Image 1 (spheres, rainbow, N blue to C red):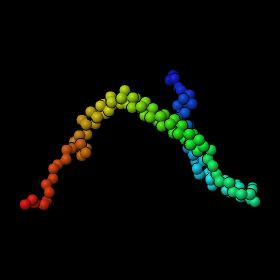
Image 2 (image 1 turned 90 degrees about the vertical axis):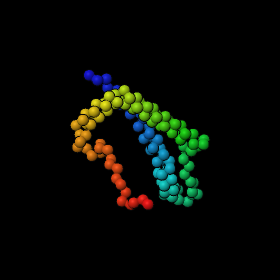
Image 3 (image 1 turned 135 degrees about the horizontal axis):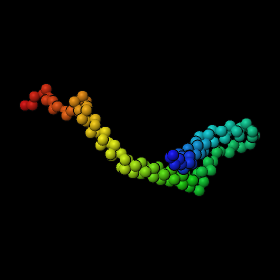
Image 4 (image 1 turned 30 degrees about the vertical axis):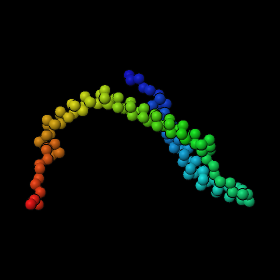
Amino acid sequence: MKNKESWVFTAWRPAIARSYLLICVFDFLIGPIVSPIYQSLFYPGQEFVPWKPNTLAEGGLYHMAMLTIVGVTAWGRTQEKLKFMNMFGEEMEVEKNTHTMESTEEENPLTKPLRKTRSRRRRR
C-alpha cells in the first residue's frame, strides 16, 4: 500500500495561486464594475465614491507578499521536478534513445544527416 499524502499537502501551491488570482480578479475587475452599479441602485442621491482596492493599501504589500510566496513555491516545485528528473529521468532517456535509435534509424528521416546541397547559382 502506498503512503498517500493528504490533498492539502499536494495541492497547497495551486490553492494559493488560485486564491490570489480570485482576489486580483475581484479587486481589479469585479469591484470597479459592480461598485458604481451598486451605488446607483441603492444610494441614488448620494455622491459617487470610487472603488478602492484594499490590497493596494500600504503600498501594495499584500501583492508583494503573495507574489513572493507564489514565485518562491513555483521555483521550489521546479527544483523538485528537476531533482526527480536527474534521479530517474536520465536512465529512462538513455534506455529509450538506445532502443529507438537501433530500431528506427533507417526508417526515420529526421535521424539521417542532412545532405549538403549546392546552390544553383554559380559564383564568378
